[in-house]
Figure 1 (cartoon, rainbow, N blue to C red):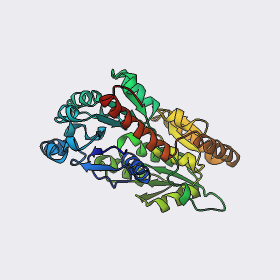
Figure 2 (tube, rainbow, N blue to C red):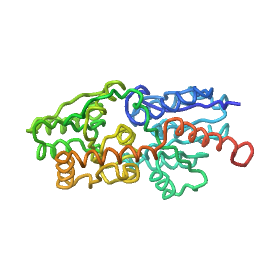
Figure 3 (cartoon, rainbow, N blue to C red):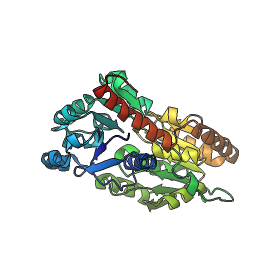
Figure 4 (cartoon, rainbow, N blue to C red):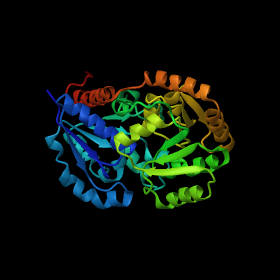
Length: 350
């Protein structure tokens, strides 16, 4: 029998960023196996908006109607006043793409909200690194489950191309921890015609940081193209045409775009942080995220040696074979939900 699941989140679920893509792919897989889920958007994603919406959250979520409630950790401020009440009525599972206290959130209340989430019945991390962070925060390992995102979303959309272009792509929001301004500045030092850098993704998530990226682009003597947000077919086409994927992130909860790049056969240049060394494996280069010289060396080496790129492309695809597909992700998350339900009702795991 299918469980009655409520999924609580904030912001715009149609955004093409990692967390929201994760949710949509999981819901699609659940629905294909007749596991319904009711997604409830409790308010905007920013902390001030969440606090303003928190009073109404109790009206929007009738906890007694559900077998399990799944909470997106991003919604920590809006759900905090209600978690204890909801847990009396049904199990609550927290899906942790990243803990805001780890990702750089500055509000002093973040630790209080985080503690509320850490006391829920089960927690799902999206990487082993994330699970270790939860353990370091005092969560019992038995309550932690891992459900990393899939890498196969774009594979069926990939066009066949005769040869890859002299093109480097970066797929990311323009926010500080994605480190795009740093990438553009280094690109200006190393790139030579006809190589191009394309920036794909939301450019308006952080207007202040966007100004820094634009300034770097304006002062960059090399070819930088801003693509913005692309539909899946267009994104798959850019993955098929590119020769390299580069994103020196300062922090990642998992890194869906890196997984998708590997699956599409793209060598990856990534920041050596969090889960990325394990995720990327032999499929590219890892550099200290703020080390200009290391990033410049990696870019120059990969761009100048086509044989190296072919070897890295083969290694990237081999690495992708070890990564989850979306049906795996959906199954693992559902098992965590079922575990929480069984613990509450039967006192034993499935």
